[in-house]
Amino acid sequence: LMVIGFGAWGFHASLFAAAWNTTGRSAWTGLPPALVLMFWAFAGVESASIATAVVADPERNVARATYGGVLIAAAIYLCACGLIMGLLPNAALARSTAPFADAVRVLLGPAAAAAVALMACIKAVGSLAGWILLTAETAQAGAGEGLFPRLFAHRRLNLAIAAVLMSL
Image (cartoon, rainbow, N blue to C red):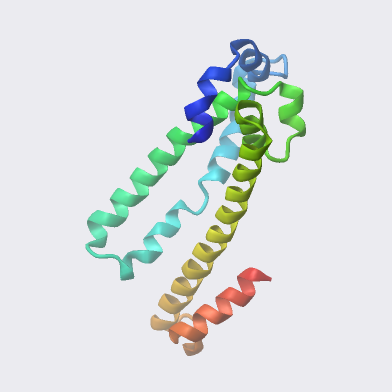
């Protein structure tokens, strides 16, 4: 959101145009690999259905959260990534290991870039916690259906096993 909020002031249409299609081929030839990346980015969205056992009114709320989450995330990422393409030269973008932090560095300086990098680390830890909970919930549901060993039916033990395995 920081990139979107401040990015419009530093956006250069010429940088964006130069980064749009660097292959020199038709834009349609880039569509299949772009779609593969897009589908990979949304892999796991189906895991929202795992939480139906612990969500109030899952028929309504899981669908709303899934569709709403995908639409909000897609809008934010499309805007932010488009703005980044107009903030950083294509060569710098290709080398970047942290394009959001690099874009914020251009807009607001190194301290803000460090804050964005820190937020990315915090997000990674939060994602790990989410996957641990999701994995434990999946194993517990499987144990309840007799598809996994009964060991996974015990919530605390199941969470501990998932935490160790996911952390490794």
